[in-house]
Image (cartoon, rainbow, N blue to C red; front, side):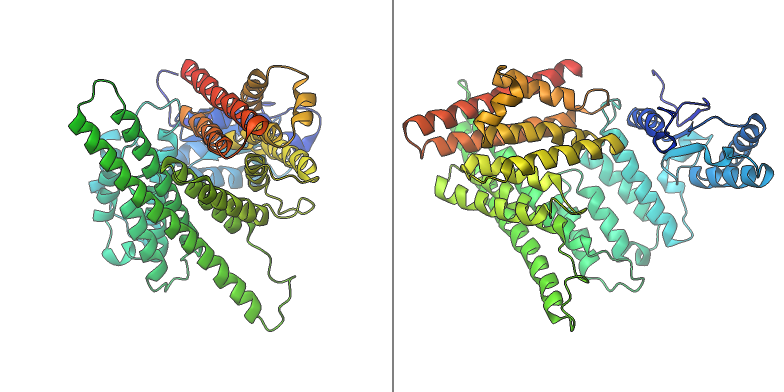
Length: 500
């Protein structure tokens, strides 16, 4: 669409009907709505099944009257459903219309006034929270491949400050508001890191009179520090590459190398800070378990997500050490810790808390370190099945990619099984096609696919570094696999560039 509307109302009777099984009625509606929202549409309504004409008229008339009168999208849908239910009690049309998008979005006829946050005057803290959450949705839309105007740090900061200038300071200081601010600034690293860090610290340390401060603020701060450390090391690598250009002057080369050295030092500092913070949080929660008078394992369950975060933090430290050209012994230690905590983070493959993301990461790194386990292939198959089922429901890019990530894991851990899967096809072509097929039929952004190619490149770097500590056939095998993954990363990057 040349012009992206704020609202799309899809009033097709069988839009969401996939087959004769009622429980799967919403799959197509979700898929189309998700694509529209990724294009920049703020709100979508789609009919999930055949509707009664009179009831449909009541719903649409009530909805549009409310929405164009200034009610939020969520409130307008609620009013329409309630009135349709009351006026047509023998029909199920009131529930047929599925709503997607920002429930707090309001339709304004005066676009210029709508864009001016200076004229916004909230009367309750909830309005400030809603405004900031609405901005968070704007950010997600701006990162869509269909949206040309993406926020940079200065634009985001300007928008946030305009909103905050209209609210009392006592509202802004509330821990849950600071948590939202930390999430907002944390989307743009490294520029937004300092403000994200400050907001997180305030969310943690301020007195929480409302009882809304999430303990996840501690997790968020640790994860932000870890992501920030990786981004700093990435910038350092860019400077190292720039310093090797043929036409660069000696003085400029020296400056770039010195800057990269300082950045890597800072990256390592934040990496270790992140690891210590998340480990500290895990120790505190375990201590609470030990202090429980019952010490009943049925009451306290392991926070798998927290362990997965720690596994990721150790993996990022290994990436920094690679870029720092550290010795393989130190890199191995970081990767072994990553494997250890990802294992805790994956939960039990027989339980509902099983985390395929953590399992796949553990399997890939185990392949890098040549850690053998007879259960690895079983775990890989379980992770792939779980990822497929999750993707069928969510249609989320990263859930789909995980299916192909399992193929990469098998490539690293078991040569014979990989040959069976690939049916003797070329290794690179098979892995590349696995990634492309895993997200076929859904929309995704160039940024999302870039994160995939980056992870494949990291695996290649780990293998290349490890090959230097090996001899003869083992070294050649590691180099060969490193080259395959590097070429897969390049091929997928080329595929993304052609697509966008």
